[in-house]
Image (cartoon, rainbow, N blue to C red; front, side, top):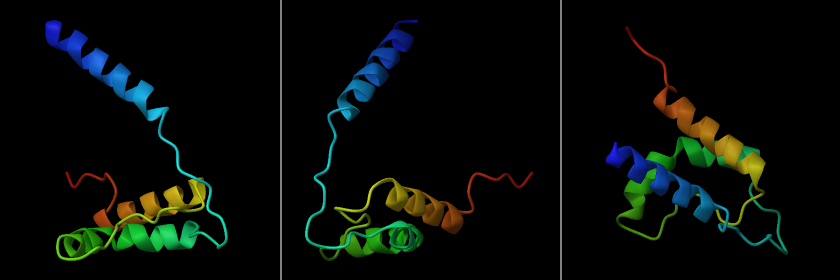
Length: 87
């Protein structure tokens, strides 16, 4: 029971701290949107491997916000097949 209380406290602290996370608004250029998010999500595993050897990032910053995130998640999900079961 003690571990449950600690787990709840850690989860609550993580939720509170994520409220502090922000990113600046992009200025002076057209930030990547949905289609680039989809592409970046699909190539994320390769970019992660490339990141070990050079300065490659798997997530564009700054980006256009929610639409980029949506495309990124769809790209990652399409590459790994989502959460389907083969039973």
